[in-house]
Amino acid sequence: MTIDLVIFDCDGVLVDSEPLANEELRKALAEQGLDMSFDEVVETFVGLSMNKVVSIAGGKLGHDLPDDFLDRLQVKTFTAFEQSLKPVEGIRDILTQLQDMPQEICVASSGSFEKMNMTLGLTGLKGFFQDNIFSASQVKRGKPYPDLYLYAAEQMDSDPARCLVIEDSLPGVQGAVAAGMDVLAYSVRGQSQRLAIAGGMVISRMDEVIEYLL
Image 1: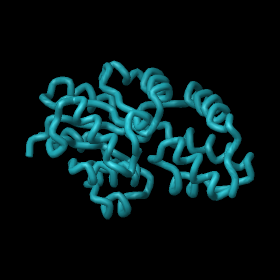
Image 2: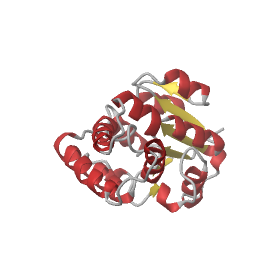
Image 3: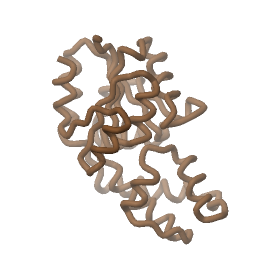
Image 4: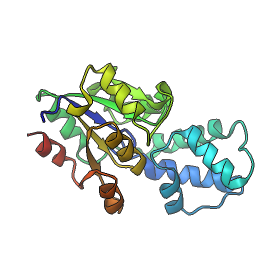
């Protein structure tokens, strides 16, 4: 079926923020007494909203995290972004090519608008999407539920069956599949098998997005 809309996740798909953000999260959780390796943090939290992260971490600790936990974490994470954040390899060329193709594009991310404005702004990618940026804060349930993808399709006036989602996390792939959308699972950090089992068509290069649409 023809694809009318390409929906991009943000972290790990547009901006290479996950290594930086997950290291800051690991350090912040350790300060609260929850010692996890970097790989454990990635396995447990990638693709989830920060409210869900706080809920899971509190459950592991047996008590709530401090009220200012997310605020302090955000300051440290944004500082790391300002120093080191880069776009995902090849994504700028893909977005440029899509400008000359019939498909519309948008972003649907578990991240907050504040975070996306910063990361997409720092990497010079925000202009590709204009106002077509959607956050899990706009729906009742975040990934792995389909709500965010369905909301994005509705806002873009697109049939979910004619949407292609570009994701890199297990919850993201699960949510997109549940929404009835095609999913390309961008995997460069060893999650290929899990993403494929969840229903994603695994890719390792961003130019495979264009190949899929042609």
